[in-house]
Amino acid sequence: MSEIDLLRNEIETLKQAFTRKEEIDRVMQEIAIQFIMPANQDHAINFALEKALELSGADRAVVMQVHSDNPSLISFTHEKCRKGVRAVLRYAQNIPFYGNSWFKKIHIEQGFIAITDTSRMPAEASNEMKIFKRGGIHAVLMASFASNNEFRGNLHLDFHTTREGWPPDII
Image 1 (cartoon, helix red, strand yellow):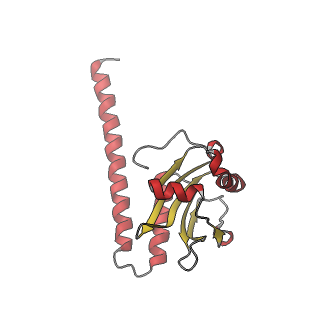
Image 2 (cartoon, helix red, strand yellow):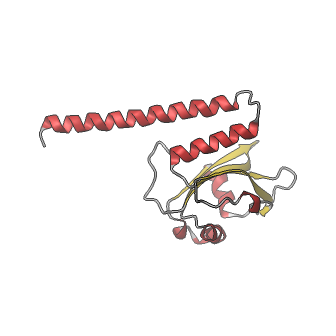
Image 3 (tube, one colour):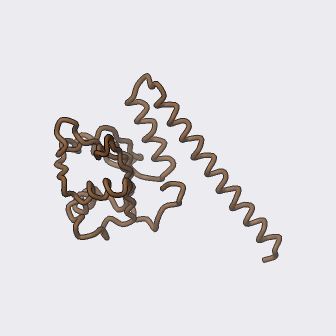
């Protein structure tokens, strides 16, 4: 391959990366607009979940919240699924969420979880692994919500296939 061909390939790669960055910026602006004085907060959240599915390639996007009146319970509050993926929102209510859970510990320490293969999680995450296996979830991305340094929930993107990893612009 000539030096000119190499330069053309590099230029094309940069164009694609720039186009992807523009797409992410546009979607983030669309999402932000939905949350500025939203007429309907549920609509804004559902819109954000739809956009998260589009950008990430996930099969399901969920908002999971800790109950304000009982911090040992969590529930899914919003969910968007790709066609053919079974919704679980109505079943994922009042789930025990104990203080020593692996997820809670990681969320508090890191604020973000990226698991490319749920079958290879650490032994201390065996409870979470069972839940993922039952749900057919092979990979997951989660970003924490916190208030006053307390874990309040997360945005959860799950995938029904394992991943080699994610592009940096997704994480």
